[in-house]
Each structure stands twice: as C-alpha cells, then as structure tokens.
Length: 446
Ligand SMILES: O=C(O)C1=C[C@@H](OP(=O)(O)O)[C@@H](O)[C@H](O)C1
Ligand SMILES: C=C(OP(=O)(O)O)C(=O)O
Image (cartoon, rainbow, N blue to C red):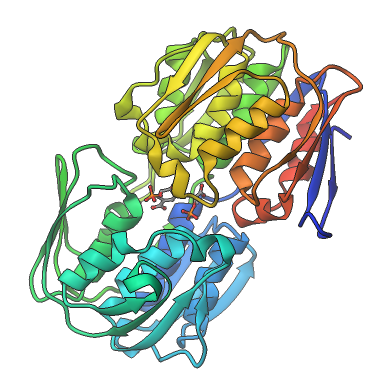
C-alpha cells in the first residue's frame, strides 16, 4: 500500500506514504463541500421538502446538518449522499437547547451567522480549537451594520458568537476580504432585511449561494461585480451536488506528476468561479482534457477530466486567479516543486487564516523534504527542479489541516523508493474527504 493510515492517537491520525510507480484507474470525487453546506442551509430555511443528491457526508457538512436537526428540521437519509429534509420554514425554526458546534468549518459558522441573524430566536455558535482562532469580525461587522444582535469573544471577533435573530436592515457591502463566506453571510441575512441588499466585489468569488437561491424561489440579481438579494421566504426544491473540484485536485496532481499515469476524474464540478487551478496549470503546461457534461436546468456545471503526466514550467501566478484557487494553493505548491523553475504565489494572505496558517504550514512541510521555498506575508515562492527532482523522506505536521495533509501525501508519491513521509494530524481529512486513503490506494500503486 502506498498510503498507510493510523487513526487517532496522540497525533490525531497519521499517514505514512511512499513512492508510487503507477497511477491508473478512475476517481469520482465526493460531493462539493461548499454546495453541500449551502444545500442544507437553504433546504432548512425553506418551507417544505428539499431533496439533496450527491451530498458530501463529511464531518464539516454533517455539522451543518446537525445544527438544523437541533432546530426542528426533519431528516430522512436515503443513503449517506441522498437526503430528504422537511422544514417548517426559517421563521419556525426552534431555539436549540445547546450551543451549535460547527467543528472545523469556517464556511458553516460564517454562513450560519448570516442566516441566523435574521431568524427569530437565540443561538450560540462555536467550533473546534482551529475555528475558535479564526476571524469572525469579517461577518460580525456587516451583520451588525444590518442591525443583527450578534456578540462574541474579543469584542465580537472570535467564537463563540451569540446571535438573537430578528428583522434586519438592508446593506450595500463591499467584499473587501474577497471572501465567498462573507458575501454569502450577507446575502443570507439579506433574506430577512426590509429591502434588497447588495454585495459588490472586485474579483469574483465562488457564487454557489447566488446560483442556488433562485432554485428555492429566492429573488437574486447577478450583475458584473455585484449581486443583489431581495428579502423573501424560500420553498423546498431538488439540489444535485457535483463532485468537489477541490478534492479532485489531489488526484489531478497525482496524474500530472506520475510518468505514464492514466486517470479519469468523473463528475467534477466546473463552476467557473472554482476552476482557476485548471487555468494556472494550463499556464504551467499541464495537460488536462476536459469533457463537459451537458448541463441540466438549475444544476452546476460539471465534467470529466483526463489529466496526463506533464512537464510543468514555473509561473508567476496571476493575482486575479487567487480567489478561484484559494483552497488549491497547497496542492499547487506541491506541483510547483516538480515544475522547471520558480513559481511565485502572492496575494494569498487569506491562507494565513484558514484551518491553519497554510503559508507557514506548506513552507515548513516543503522545506522538510528538501524543497527550497521563500515565504512572504501573502504567499510563497517554490523553486521547482523538474519531475525527477531530489527529495528526502521526513516527518511533518499537517497542523491538523486536511488540505496540507492530502497535498503532502501526493508529494510523497515522488520520494525515492524506500523513503517515506510521515504526516501527523490526518484525522482532519475527514472534514472534507472521507475515504481519501482508500481511494488514493485504489489508483496509486508501487
Ligand atoms: O464559501 C465557501 O464555501 C468557501 C469560501 C472560501 O473561504 P473564504 O470565503 O474565507 O475565502 C474557501 O476557502 C472555503 O473552503 C469555502
Ligand atoms: C478553508 C476551507 O474551509 P472552511 O473555511 O469552510 O473551514 C477549506 O476547505 O479549505
């Protein structure tokens, strides 16, 4: 086995990964995390029945689901990925008798802060050690401007947050953090405002909330660089969730880095606000054929990817592509180590406030295996030395960050034969990619 997993223990999970000689087969990535969260939120705020197909049954999305079960939503699980929600509608959601714990998930807690600000009742939102350290002022500020009664530790900037929901005022908000989570929090709060609210953004961020709202009967106007939402009630619908391109990215990288690979990635979400990694890889010379699935009314774009082993060239990553590839920067940094020449990634300071400080985490992990890296406040530069570059086995800390753990597992497949990478903190992979080790071992072979 290329990847051996030990769960639990003092390191909270560990991988031991060695060289892969062959990569072949087909992979269907699990459901998109961003869309799964939103489908549950809108389906629970909507009156009546919502059916969700392709739901991501991961720790993060289960946290969102459980929060609504604690507020009176009824769930029927046809399979782990196929859910039926029955909701009395947003205004009839109950006060949960305990705090709502969103674990590791920034998306869940920030979007819920927006939604619950406008729903009558008292609720307290919290999360795990990582989430309690992440900034919440970015949502608390605009929501307070809308009249939300929201408070929290550190003057409202850290969890736990307490929210007493009620009627809100509209807002015209500029998305200064280039954050889809902040934009979505404002849009969800806007459903309970007295007139339409608008979010303006210079660089587009993922647009799943504004794509999904109309399917639930929400009124939304999408213009270039701005989105407006009207107050209103929602009604249940059917949501089909495509596979997560952020999860597919690890297998894409595996195929690009392994000579002779033959891998097919099926049902990968191809929403244009999420595909910047594909654009960056094209600039680097990556060979990825894309076969688009005919789009069904109301569903997100998706397709099949056919990546091939590629000789990559280092690039200066265009700033405009950063928001659309924000979760893929760790795996991009790994790919860059095998390109010819230097790759510089700047304008990505947001990475310092993800599940971990992903800039510091990737710099330390790459240096541990012998990759030369320069660290900047807002990014990193990686010295690529080609596909056959020198590397050494090591023990590294993923900082309990799922994307660092999976990125470094991919890197380890290029170690010299007989050398291994030990990665600590891998239990957190469950937050976004349950079953990653088995899927990895099913396509990567000695
Ligand atoms: O809206 C979303 O679903 C997400 C937005 C991004 O965060 P930011 O909004 O903080 O950039 C991304 O990193 C996260 O994984 C998911
Ligand atoms: C940053 C991420 O998620 P979140 O902000 O929801 O914790 C991620 O999945 O990479």
